Image (cartoon, rainbow over all chains, first blue to last red; front, top):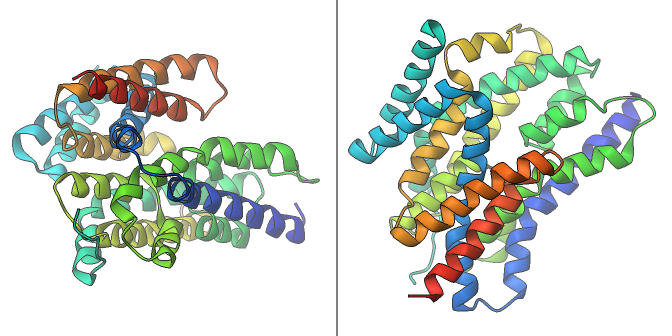
Length: 99
Length: 231
């Protein structure tokens, strides 16, 4: 790709991506925040996470699913995210090495 | 609700709590730099893209389209499809951020990505008012991502199989799962999350790549509203 084209393409991607980052807030600031909309937004946060985690874990295989479950269990017990991540990742590494 | 604030202390805390994810962002950045080199993208272009776009999924997606003449349609559609989920992240932060001056919010939006967003909503759920965690975490991720890209597009070599073997491909997922754990408020969440998970899985099977997050998240949000309204 020519330098000028590459620069244009990257600029277009940057502008478009910024629009997706700012757009959600912008749209919400233009509509009145009803209790129902607030409930929707509150449930949206957890649902976004689920919608990222579940398909990604399923496509990554059984070791990944067990690792995520282990991380969640440790997190619930200890509230220590670093420890939970270490346990989950360590478990995945072990499972992939042995199974 | 109390007004949101932004403090240096909050930024420092956001950066510290994302150190592990930042390390992963660095490695992922290295992988992007190498992949960019492999499709013939010049170093300056890969580095500029990481700095200006700062969205790994879409950057990997366009590598397959990096050709002359530029395939503008697919390039822009791929960017929008993969990054459309940011729209939901921004919307979900609205109640928390709306007491801040608009210029601060739109400046912070430059740094919006999943890890620092997840940290932010987890902090919000604990009653935190300091939006600094979102910004500090974002700065750390940006620096790590760009530094990784520079290293990968310039000199480091590393195969994806390396970090899969050590489970490092799961850093990001494990982190998001930990943040999710702190978000559960009660049983109404279970139904919403179940709907989100099932819809996302189904959407992954039938929709073009990237749209399943939007589909699952909106389904979960709607089910949550219905469940809330019934009690």
